[in-house]
Amino acid sequence: MTSWTRRRLAALAVGVLLPLCAAGCGTSGGQDPGARAEPTAPAGRLIDHTDEQGRPYREVDAAGAPGIGVEVRPDTGGAWDVRLTVRRFRFSPAGTAARARAGHGLAHLLVDGRLVGRLRTTEYHLPARLVPRGTHHVTARLYADDGMVWAVAGKPVQSTADITASAQEPPGTSSPEPGTAQEPPRQTARSRSQE
Image 1 (cartoon, one colour):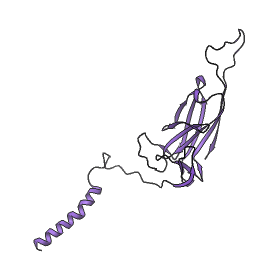
Image 2 (cartoon, one colour):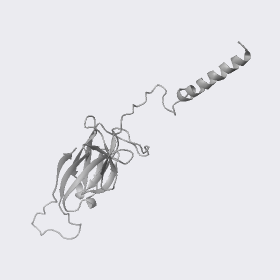
Image 3 (cartoon, rainbow, N blue to C red):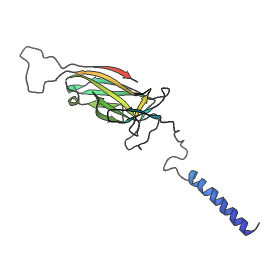
Image 4 (cartoon, one colour):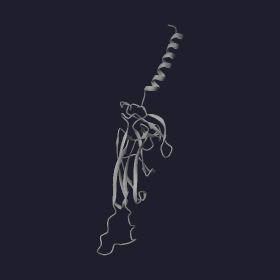
């Protein structure tokens, strides 16, 4: 074999091995080299629906779709404790890249259709000032990390609890007559799912 042929073969080998090594050799961005990469699943398809803020729906099949439930319980001082339960869904940490991954994202909490919180956890304390006297609808809706609404069969993946708040008397406004009992404020909650 001539030196010209050897040089040509060496250059060809370097040309083939260099891109392969760049793709698979070395460290993996600080991750454990033995760790398996999370499989990428389809992230649904966009459909012609939007939420109250104009965010498009990202529809997924019912089989394997994420699910959410919301429970709201009265707390002291007219406030409410919100607890979410999720199925086939993981909350993404703050700072996650804005791209959709199946079964990942965050929940928006709405009171009577008005956004009051973006949740990355299953618990939230809803202040009394956001729930004045009367009956209200507290909705938890799932969103992908790209800001789009997770949906199944054209409907958002969400759950709603109906709550009724009684007015609380501000401190010092009046006091009960001596010898009469003052009725404590009443608060009730009822959940219904809209999946």
